[in-house]
Length: 124
Image (cartoon, rainbow, N blue to C red; front, side):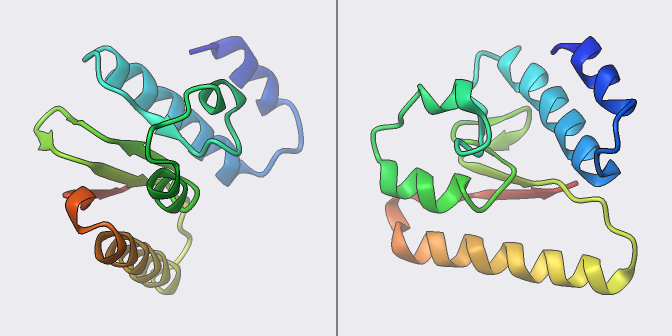
C-alpha cells in the first residue's frame, strides 16, 4: 500500500467517498494478500489487476465490474467466493438501496453461474 499516494490525494478536491473506498480496498488487498489469497478489484479501474486475466472472463466481468472487490477463495473465516461492496452511506434510504442493488447483482450472477456461486457478501 502506497500511503504517500493516498495522503497526496487528501490534498486534492477528490470526493471523500471515493477516497474512503480506495483506502478500504487498499487495506483489504493488503490483508487478503497476506493470506496468500487473491483479491480482485474492478479490473476496469485497476490497471495492475487487468494484466491478471482470469480463465472465465464472462464470470469475472459480471462479478467484478459490478462490485468493489472480489475474493474468489474467500479470506479469514469467509469460505468460498466473497463479494465486497464499499460505500460511504449518508442516510438509511441510501443504505437500503445499496443493499438491495448489491443482493440483486449477486442473485443474477448466481443464477447465471450456479457452479460458481458467490457464498459471501460483505458490505462495508
